[in-house]
Image (cartoon, rainbow, N blue to C red; front, side, top):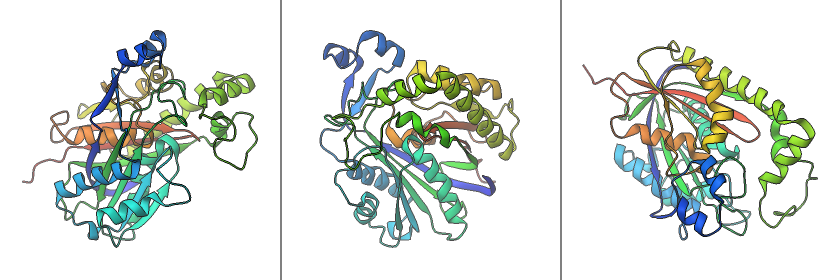
Length: 344
């Protein structure tokens, strides 16, 4: 999406205090040593008590307080998730909006799998074209048995519990941690079968297996189509997103102001095969991996990376980061964010 002007971003993340180290996971038999080495995580945050919507409220309050934005001034609240949110036939976004006090915000739930938070930011920009009031994008996921084994449910990743909040505004009234200069999403809907396999669509949750098993559907996909189809499509869509996002932001691939190319929070082996290879062909910017102590945080990988970039000194004023993400279905998002220059 080519933006008419930079948009302000204020980003934060909340992580539970409990953690499982990789050594603890190996000792407990949750993951074998070879798989753990391929994943490359050091630890995963775990939330045994707080539900995902409650976690989202904590991240949202953190962001709103930091920028002194009144909850009632929000025009919309977009909430993205991958896994169960705590109740059935119920709206988590409305719960989050109510607990935050965002009485005028339109609550919207997003089901874009692992790219939900990124798509939420893109939708927030579109929303701001019709309403000048800020938009809050939240994500939250918690991965618990018996429905989800955080180390074994999927290949190429292990799941950490976390929530994120990103306030998106027009940049004319509120302060900003970062400025959003471009955001581009590409699509490969024909790959939805990777998370469905050859299963028929059924009428009840967990009707195919007592625990969600993405490994099973991926094996079915590879038997039917081969891994080459997936890799070729993914590389094409990632490169299109990255090249377009840089161009829309007015940056050459080798612009010295482009400080980082930020990776999703997948396992290191999977990331090398699916993301790093096409990314380094598009830009020589140094790669930044922020997920070794968080794991893959469901719908919030890109948003959590914005939260990390928002604090500390990774970006100096006038420097930029390209942030890349993808999610089942599939969609791929690349955005360019920069540290604002000090006022003259």
